[in-house]
Amino acid sequence: MVDAQLDALLVTATSNIRYLTGFTGSAGIVVVTAEDMVLVTDGRYTEQAADQLSVSASPARLEITSIAQREVISSMISDGARIGLEADHITWSAQRRYADDWFVGSEVVPTAGLVEQLRRSKDDAELARMELAAAIADAALATRRSTLLDGLTESEFALALDSEMRRLGASGTSFETIVASGPNGAMPHARPTDRRLRDGDLVVLDFGCIVDGYCSDMTRTVAIGEVDETCLRMLDVVTAANAAGVAAVGPGVATSEIDAAARAVITEAGWADSFTHGTGHGVGLDIHEAPRVAGTSTDTLSIGDVVTVEPGVYLPAHGGVRMEDSVVVTPDGCRPLTHTTKSPTP
Image (cartoon, rainbow, N blue to C red; front, side):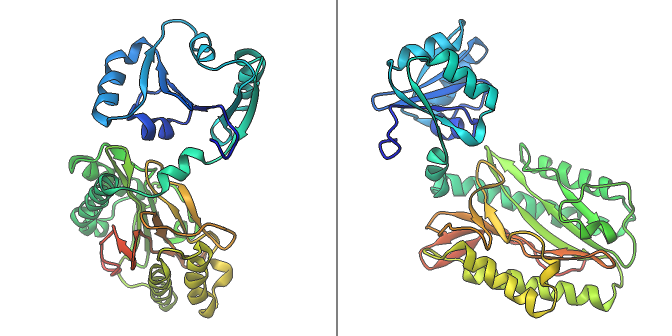
């Protein structure tokens, strides 16, 4: 905040509020000044907010209000202050409301990534939650994997996988589970349909779950029955690209170099134009967070970052292959959080 020349910061993104205070309610604002950090919420969350702040040992204090939040929050910030808003998480109408109504005598300015940069490096407690989430996803697929041969639809298998993760202790899924078979696999973010899995299909499985707020993320591609030679080559190439990207991960490494390492394998195979997305992203309280792993990224890895490495090849005539691991950056490289085999056998 000093570097950004801010007198106050309004934190409105729910993941950032949780990170700073432990509060998981749907309505709240954190006000940060040089002297104080205050969570402002309403009477619906009186006991929940107090309990969660206490358990998290957050330095924030709690303000419960039954009147307009504007009156409470504006009283905490002196006139003429320079107030930061989280530009990536606020609507234009909200920005106008803050500038024209809440803080008329102050300067309201956009900020980006102030809390997110703090969130990048995970501590041991955060990593423990993420490792458990990844272990639950590993175990869920291991339990349900053989049913890929039972003629289920994409939607039926997705539901079974989601239910298994819940049964094993997850509070929910990190995102909508992707089960994409045959030609649907050529769409990187296909949604499950009523198409039945059949012999000759490649099936892309991209899924994860949440444990105590923290996400896991993994993709595996399996082959149903006998697949053609192109499909087999896709599996080999993408698995090698994933390994090359993971091997490049380490502290001080530019994320663009990880992208380049994975992409080089696919380019050499002649499928450069069929790898149509970045190589990965950060994971934590949000399924997509800093740093970005892409050729256009200017991010550099640090110890404690958790990133995915997920190259893919997508050919409409044959389907798609993606292999994704989540790894944590360590002093001497990285450590995988995801451990499911990359064998294509169901």
